[in-house]
Image (tube, rainbow, N blue to C red; front, side, top):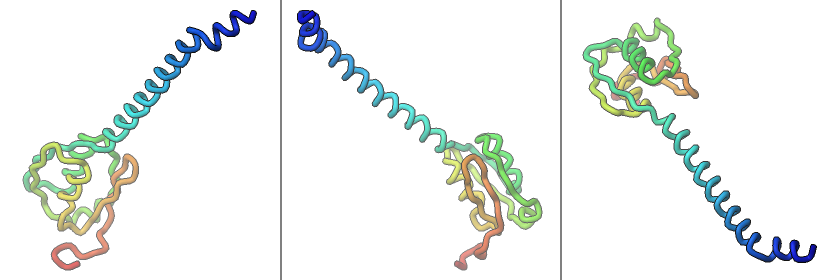
Length: 128
C-alpha cells in the first residue's frame, strides 16, 4: 500500500497529472478567448448600401434585410425625411446609420438587436 501511495503522489503519475492540468487550463483559456472574439464580431455588422435618391424608409428596409435587426419607427416622422444617396461598402452598422440620418429631422438609437427611430430634438443642419 505504501508503494502505491508514494508512486502515485511522488512518482511518474504525479508529473503526468500536472502536465494534464496545465493542458486543460490552457485549453480553457483558448476557448474563452475564442468565444469572446465570436461575440464581438456579431456586434460589428457590415453593411453594403448603394442607393440613389431613396427614402429613409427604403434605406432602413435594406439595412434590416442585410443585418436582421428589427426597426421601430413612426411613418409620420419619416414623411418629412430628405432623400438619401449613399454608396457604402463594408461599413459598420453604426456608420451606415450615421450617414443615413445625417441632416435629417429624425435620429436613431440601437438597443440590442433593435434600431429605434425617433424625432430629433435638435434642429437639423449647421445650427447646434
